[in-house]
Image (cartoon, rainbow, N blue to C red; front, side, top):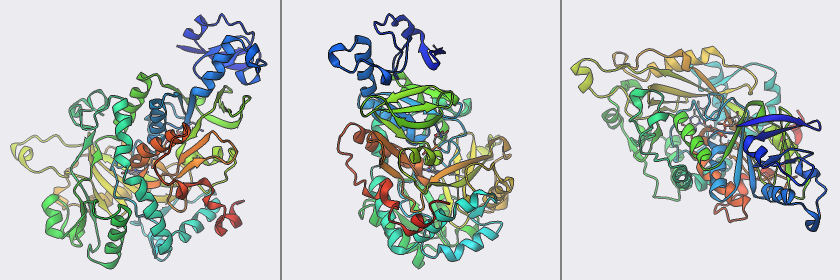
Length: 534
Ligand SMILES: Cc1cc2nc3c(=O)[nH]c(=O)nc-3n(C[C@H](O)[C@H](O)[C@H](O)COP(=O)(O)OP(=O)(O)OC[C@H]3O[C@@H](n4cnc5c(N)ncnc54)[C@H](O)[C@@H]3O)c2cc1C
């Protein structure tokens, strides 16, 4: 148990365990992550700089700062960083601005759940600039706009995204993402093992309802990517780039014609399957992303990790700490935490923190939506023996969304809407997703039950114009690391990002070429240099 106290004008959090240890020889507060003592100012302001004169409590506190790490953001990326840092021996505090880790405020919770290891080809693609106006104007378009003052601020981002549609840039992005995606599942395995999670085991208490408690976290049933024409030039060249990103033959990916697609998903309509699909036999998805987030959270805490939420966990500023090499994070409630490893993994909200750390970056958001239907429980014998309405995630490339048979109901998730993180959802988008999902199926085969509007959801994908995440060191603070900007595939890339970041934090070889993900890569871009001040 903890409580916050004022001590010489400074808010400090004291746990009851700490109070028992408060017989400190030093008349100052030692405000460090693991242990806070009453009686003075934070460890950084301490006068015991000379080891010979350092009191035991302060020496211990300084050592604690050195062995601690603070991760900002409790989505899949932040949680994975926290768990991997913990595996490497750090005492980790996870700061989360929302009321809890695994809540709907995080982009990691309401998404389509597909483990998209094949998704190295970005949505920024050659010719997008020609298609974009039509998509924005159509009520069925995959690209939409939410009008508001933020749009003027997005000018540089949009210019950068258009510049990234050049074939050479698309290829660069696809190859770089491939280097991470090839290790995506391996990147999680150690973290899950550390937390005692069997991804193919039952969700149990983490399931969204009792009826699905026996469902596994992961459902390994493949993935279908519907195409206008699987044999046309665009589809074939994107497929070639996927394979190249995966270093050739190891990616299992097969072109299916209509009968192949309907053989797998018999309820898809004749019209939408005409062009065939790409079939990823090894594809898999989460039956409920929130369930896994919560299981990872609990595994992290069980291993000694600390979590702070709400104003107590919302990091407002980052500044130099008072001991060499440390940084001080200040929360909204005024408390400070010093550490010498901080990871900024606040998703679409990371730009302001990165700016304080010396890096002005064109991070923005691609807003995305999801809707969900509560599943019908089969009642009659015919219903019980007929094939399920949907077995695996199906992506409509044209509509820009994925329909996944989640635990507790089918979910449709997708669309890209420009408009920033301040505006609330545009309700028409939920209707658009609803109608577009129904249009994928034979009308009499749409057996997903009632749409559960309580589950209507808007999420903020963190996206840089070149569709590559930022993974690297801050320009100003040696010990601040970045892990954000994972656009449409942040759940998939969380594990490998966490593994790489933790390795960097302890001076180990990250095992991946991080140049393409450098925060410095925008400095030379004309569209950013000219418009960054907007
Ligand atoms: C509709 C939709 C469908 C998607 N489908 C898929 C999919 O099928 N597969 C896939 O891999 N990806 C998918 N994604 C993308 C994926 O959800 C995101 O890329 C991913 O969730 C980003 O994770 P994150 O941890 O970086 O950010 P988040 O999950 O947003 O986590 C960041 C956290 O930081 C917290 N925070 C913000 N500011 C602060 C602060 N100052 N201090 C402390 N905490 C702070 C936030 O509250 C938040 O919880 C989808 C996204 C959408 C919108």
